Image 1 (cartoon, rainbow, N blue to C red):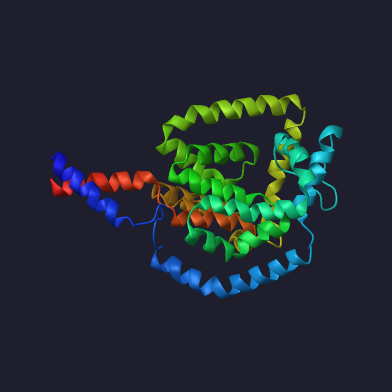
Image 2: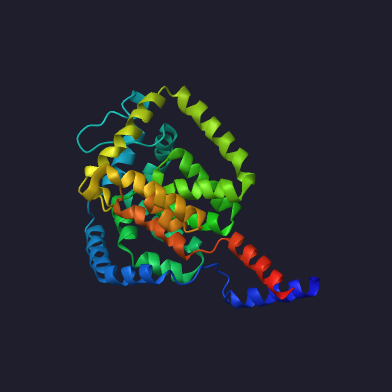
Length: 300
């Protein structure tokens, strides 16, 4: 029995591919067809966005982050005014006190540099050809960093998981909920660290006196459903998308389709949220373990 199990494991390991990266493989046919249909518009949008970046276009999110770091000390962090609005933890605003001095150009370049941590040229190429990535670079948001951490978390990296869960605590958005739920479901060793980290964060955020303002700011994020950049079905059917999306997100999460679950869970889709779809190309080690067990049973 042990010898047959070893042979089954070896055959599965060889069939998985010869590269060091852990890639799920081709997506379902319907998803591949949709991707092909959107490929040309995606390239056009990506190229237009790159031109805006080269022309030193306005970075909306970066500008807000820098302003948030400056407002942290005067109690106006969550006072929306004009184009300014901040919906993240006050601890995240404090982080930009350190980050802001590097400047916009270095911040944008760091988005490209962090892609090396994907450790697979196919995933890197896929991201570099995507409009959501260049939109994130243009606006100066953090979705690229979160997506890279999510990929490594799904692969089983402890560092990647820690970074991803920390980003969830600081920037709690529905688009990351499915992977957080999946991680604490499939990897129970992360449950207490997440609880402890959330508790520490709540205590520190409470000491700033800004917690109530943060909660109101989070509630106000629902206004994005009526925003001009919303690509989700809620842009057409409104709040009806929320229950539909949650049901789909639960179904996809159970099936291990974390990329689709992530976008389904979000009431609205800003373009850079779609970066989470890269998880559809990542194979979690739990999937290989299950296949190994099935192969062992079949060969017995």
